[in-house]
Amino acid sequence: MTVAAATAGDLDIAITEQHVIKKIAWRLMPLIIVCYFFAFFDRVNISFAKAALQTDLGLSNTAYGFGASLFVVGYVLLEVPSNMLLYRFGARRWIARIMISWGIATAAMVFVRSEWQFYALRFLIGAMEAGFAPGILYYLTLWFPKSHRGRMTSVFFLATAFSGIIGAPISGLILNYLGGVHSIAGWQWLFLAGGLPCVALGLVVLLRFDDGIEQAKWLSADERRLISVQLDRQKSEIGEHSAWRSLLKPGVLLLGFIYFLIQVASYGLNFWAPDLIKAAGGGSAAAIGFLTAVPYICGAVTMLVVGRMSDASGERPKFVAALILAAGFGFFASGAFDKNVVTLVGALAVLGAGVVAAIPTFWTLPPKILTGAGAASGIALINTLGQVGGIVSPVLVGSVKDRTGSTTLALYVIGGTCLLCAILVLTSLPRGLKASDLPT
Image (tube, rainbow, N blue to C red):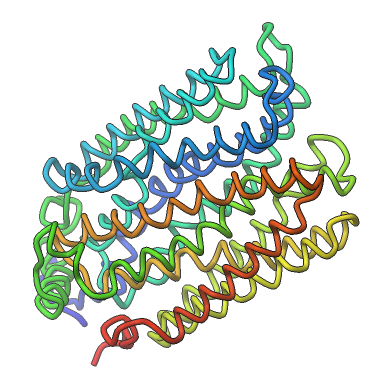
């Protein structure tokens, strides 16, 4: 699609959709990626801090898993209210508030001295971060027509891969070389590194973001109109729904359950990959950090490839199912080969390629049936239901390891949830979610 715009020399040039999308992407996506990197860095560094936290605070594997999952409890309880407030006050101010408050709460982990303080702060960090991911996903629907969302959502979720590719080695290096510097433990440096940059990023968000395309003065009137026409047409095709009515829309709860199953797998990777590699003989903290990056590198590559392929085909559910099946195979293989670090890392690579890429592909589905205030609340509800998987997965793996001395059984259970997820995606989605995203 194009529109004509007059140049200074009175010549007409075509403003193409691709040109405007690229301009929007370069304006928004780098900052979004950096912000979300720190959101997921918090999930990576807690897994690296595990051993030191257990030693200093006297935590069992079950207690660590419970504390790690309390982050998700706080996140889940405030997810929908946070996104509704984002819709009311505007994305720019609300996302900045989230960044600043969760950064302060994360940095405050340096003061933890007891098991109960650990529980309280993990809950608070989750509560402060609540609404960030679904808020960004809703924000993307205000800027990008649906035929571009596969790639943009994949670019957004590249941050989850970067948190492993970059964050995992950094976490290992911090533990190796900063522990004891200025009488601060290595795990305390981890939380300072994860929290303080978020405060600065929140201030950048206030300066850089706009609440929607109509406020984007860095686009010309013709550029704004070109994209706005498409966004308005797609909204009219779906129909506007109130925040509460959207929660009852057919397919929303099913998407929430499917995302729950995906998140059981995702948190299984995020919280336990370093521990699995260490148990298999992965070496020093720095070496474990670099090995932990492998599944995220595979996930990043797969994510970009699948993002383009799913945009080209418009057949989103088939890609979600294939990716989560690959993740399931990776979990089964990780359980079977958990004693050998080479085969374990290979299994984790397949797991990472599947689950890391499945998440952005999944998030192209909700905007097919949700728009406006309904999208803000509906996306938040789906994410809330999904994040419950972050409560189940750490506790499941931790309790199984405490009881049996091995994580194998838990890995097999998570592999089974991946298989169930793929079956639901292929057989149970309503027609609106199965429809192709290609323009008709």
